[in-house]
Amino acid sequence: MAQVQQVMYVDPSLGEDGGNTQFDFTEQTIRKAFIRKVYAILMCQLLVTMGFIALFVFHEPTIQFVRQNTYLFWVALAVVFVSMIAMACCDNVRRTTPMNFIFLFIFTLAQSFLLGVATSSFEINEVFMAVGITAAVCLGLTLFAFQTKWDFTLIGGGLVAASMVLLMFGLIAIFIPSNNIVRLVYASLGVLLFSLYLVYDTQLMMGGKHKYSISPEEYIFAALNLYLDIINIFLLILMIMRSS
Image (cartoon, one colour):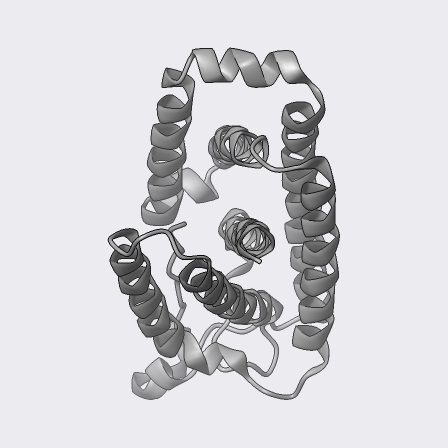
């Protein structure tokens, strides 16, 4: 899954050297309200996603209908990419209400549909185990990001480079004959990478003493980043379970 690059903001009032100091929250209340809003949006996204997964796992007619109408998969895939690119690249789309919520809702529906299709090929116990592991991992990483003194916002460039390496690894693995070890290594590295992304995106949202932060106006963008991190971790954990 594609990962959205973060948008950094420089405070122009800091003068010529402002490039070294990023936008920061000036009031604890603003920061806390922003974080609450992001997590409220994120929880709604995850609830919709879990609803689709449960539908595809427990309702056999839905699975059969989608398998008989494969065009739905490609339509959902196109909607995911178009809506994600629109929110990532167009300030007006992700900052203007209610347009930003409409685009995020459309993206979440399409992405949840794709996740439902993906999980329909797994056993119910595998899906539930992956959901539990993902929830535990994401909760632990979020608490770590809030408590640690390490500033992970400094490693954005390294994460992008690691993403390119993982992408090339995945492309090469396509041409390797079916091998569980290769898939297991790829998925394990992917979980590690997106776990770092989750900590990175969480600290961008927190602001405070971190070198880089994200504007309070970008609550849709922040929720989108966290959502993508979580679903990528979930999918890669499913791949690990299948490969092992």
